[in-house]
Length: 274
View (cartoon, rainbow, N blue to C red):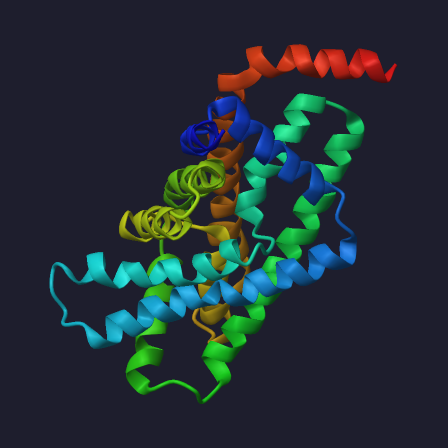
């Protein structure tokens, strides 16, 4: 018995098992009360700012060399670690978590629930990012070197042309969805998964809509970016790219892996319910 238990614990989760874990998480998220989603999303928007802050800390202390970006981009992982391990609502995680229940159920009710969750979490995340951005700009809590690094990073992140910002957002959407997909089978290795994947987002100069929202608010509140450009040239292209990468590319490919295995079960459940 002990040997059998050890074998079961050592067996890797297959794609069908991972799908079921992520789908059930998605079902639970879709049914959460509005107030819970708001507070969780608000907290995520605030805490993701530590990605910008930690990266700026690295930049302000490292020499200006060719290898500096590879080291300073490790700071980008801090906010994601806080948000993901804290089980807070981050919009880009929900591009796969809530889509798997949708492609399985394919009902108007599920579409409404997905759009409700996306809308609430996105607004809450952006509001939290605004609070963090206001703190960065107005609070006398940072050294001149650290403030300069925050503004440098924010200017770079918001400086891509709209099409380029959209294209750079696609890999970021895939990578965040990849974190969600891999976490169920990585017991004990969650920190490494988050650090490596989010480091690659920063090191590859890819764009993430919520971490980027902090940088957009920094530039807006300091008067270095106009509201029209912030929305039309930066925020919306990155949002579209993250959704495309997380939903159309990764989530549908993940669904394609298990569709033939899980659809008979779903059909049985549907007929049984009738």
